[in-house]
Image (cartoon, rainbow, N blue to C red; front, top):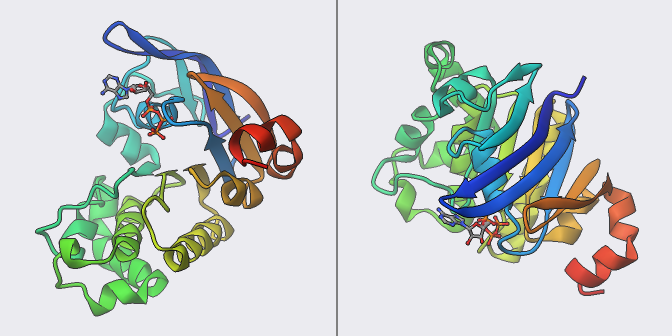
Length: 236
Ligand code: ATP
């Protein structure tokens, strides 16, 4: 059985249907990419998995349980964390205060100190600057902080929405390496990236979304070779 199974969901904003009959299946471990043009519904899908938007129809099965109607904190408690588009940090709080906010469940809260140490060993740069306000950080450092905050929830699954958006090329490389490292450490990663080539290269599986529907799916390496996809999204 898949770890996360999206089963035939419809999602609306008011009368506007953004996702229709969408199904996809995420196996445990590794990176799965969701790619597609602007407005295809990628962020909506991520927010829907996290319970911030409710599907009007369909199921979201996580470890066999339908989580589609649960509240966001209940979903985070079950093991899914989001690194949102735009990082979502509180700029006037320090790095450490931002990180601590990621510990949502009682269990994660009780392990705050040891989880902070784990985040600092992954991102030593954050430890050097833990008392500084997050807003004073570069985009790349803020992304590390946002990923660190997700780890504080002790997730099994990490959703990353456009993690390299707006970053300098050198930082994009660091973020990509970080995501690969998280996958090597056993986290299941769902990655939405405008950088389609890079994200498919590091993914075991990819889904292509168009107007809220899955129009293509396959192994990352297969999709990279797909002529239509290369023309539409890779400009090749
Ligand atoms: P992008 O890469 O631009 O973020 P995306 O694939 O993530 O694109 P979404 O942000 O999910 O796409 O948006 C899908 C559609 O839903 C778009 O047409 C968008 O205008 C619309 N939309 C998104 N958020 C809202 C909202 N809060 N209210 C109404 N419409 C919305």
